[in-house]
Length: 479
Image (cartoon, rainbow, N blue to C red; front, side, top):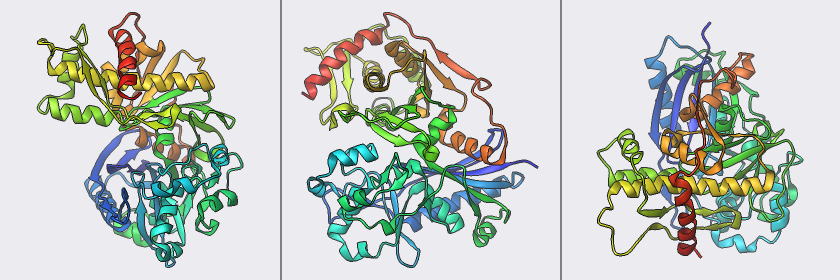
């Protein structure tokens, strides 16, 4: 019998549901925008209502299953954006979501004193980005509501609870909370104490590829799927995306999307005394993902295209950019100096004065793509200083690598082959597919069997010349 999976991919700006077969055929995808609300009790806080998101999600599932009734669902799984959590009350209702873009804990970060211990145990700095800080901020302004929290979980495992009624969290998401000791793979009483959080609200750990059991009967009936369909635990979107390219120990990969994490896999817990990286639990918690990140990248390209070339296709822009033999400006729009733990607050274009009469919009968009490549390269170099990289290639996935120019720039800067495997732009769906196939004992296409585009580094390319001036100008903007 044909095996198909329903994959729920919870992002930051948008989420989607995909119906995919075990052999990798994507039958259909439904996208929807995530709705957020501002909490005016704080300077910079946002939340979402799980019930609203659930309605959108189930609507997408029903549409897909109605359109493709000949492809029965054997299992459901999920991936989710990191740093986001869902809160449950005492009656077991998911009543509030605190997303990764919520910074309600910022005002109280100075109260946290155990910083070296927190970084050593969690692989993360003390910042308002992580759920520990969000919960601390929630406790400060809403003590009664905070006292009513029964459990929390991540976005991806909230989906599991929605379909099965069972509440767990995967190590790749547990490590984001800053309550989880990534070496012992257990919740830490000391870490919880640092933020004034009770361990009672933390769910049990379940590994990617575990079955949460069968889909609830009422949910299966509502969707019109078999009562024998199971929910297979997924995990954090970055780790799942890297699963799609078959990443192993010693590989380095770039996930080029809204941001562009640069990561390697280690079989030991890497600890950097200078705190230049994040160390994540990989799926299952058996290996580790060491990560650096230039911050916002792909989003800059999207916004600049809408501003400069609203009526042109990406293909048309790429064609014009490929004709450029000189650069007339540099761009600086990435948002993080990761190894120094600081945001880059100023950005823009730097060009000669007076204004060049030969300057055209294509020069600006070329510089934006080059900025993304250079920003990723800086993070790659930083990662190599810490963990090394002996292999002669880098793996790439996610939608940013639809830009052939970005691919070639990155190969030229790193001096490594860039391998972009088939299905790279649907990395989360393909990673979830591999997890489900492994559970059912179905062979996924091996890396050697996957079709791939390989970008070979070129010497003396324009991007290498550009990089030197880009670096100087970025330092000038953000001294």
